Amino acid sequence: MNANVYQHFRNEERPFIDTVSDWVEQVQMQYAPYLTDFLDPRQAYIAETLIRQESELKFLFYGGYEAAERVRCLIYPDYYQPTTDEFDIQLFEIHYPVKFATLGHGRVLGTLLGTGVKREYFGDIISDGENWQVFVAKEVASYVQLQVDKIGKIAVRLEERPYTAILRPLDAWTSEKTTVSSLRLDTIISSVYNISRQRSKQLIESGKIKVNWTEETRPDFLLDLLDIVSVRGFGRIQIQDVEGMTKKEKIRLSLGVLRK
Image (tube, rainbow, N blue to C red; front, side):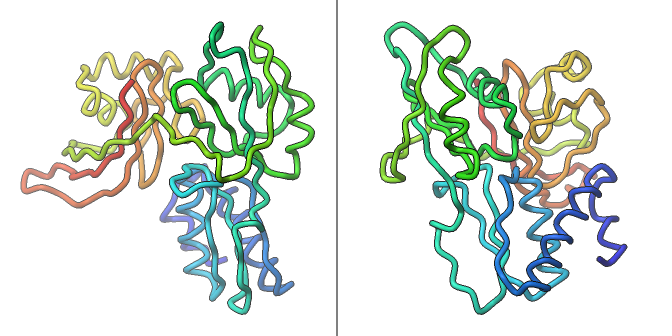
């Protein structure tokens, strides 16, 4: 691994960079494909950057449906012809008493993680407003299906569904453009949701913000390409493109935004 690779990424991303290097090396040595667990968009971006830089290998991302946010990556030699079946993803629909109960993304995810299975084995959780589905790595699918019979106090059952039965998710990202003075977390949140920097800082310091599904309590944390920021009570932001500077030295951003 070229040591210069690290300088393009954050310090805390180094262990993941090393992991990607191991995957690449394994495919090169064994000349056979390798399937990763589910990656978030930032991890997928790092993986793509490194595979392109470090090797002649090919790769494909898939998360169970076209617009998936969390995806598995298949890294393979150029002779290989992959199919989507090889991504080993099981789709489950969550059956629950719709008339008497409501589910939410956080509760569903909390229950799944309560089985003791790592986050990396779960893909997207999607809903059309009433019905809920979840994408799970096949390696753990039957175990998860056995373990999950309640979400909170609501009795539920996970039912296998074919890909043809995928819901049309209600959450639609809207594309927005903005200019900001910096890529600091507090700056971006206050700009997108039109709240004061002080309010934005309070949200961050009180543990209401996640960056790529990990709690982030530093207002001065610098965001980067394809990071996803979840702001409890407000929605989510994805940095989709950093488009350069304005004449007044502001940064031009292209964002995906979900507003609650």
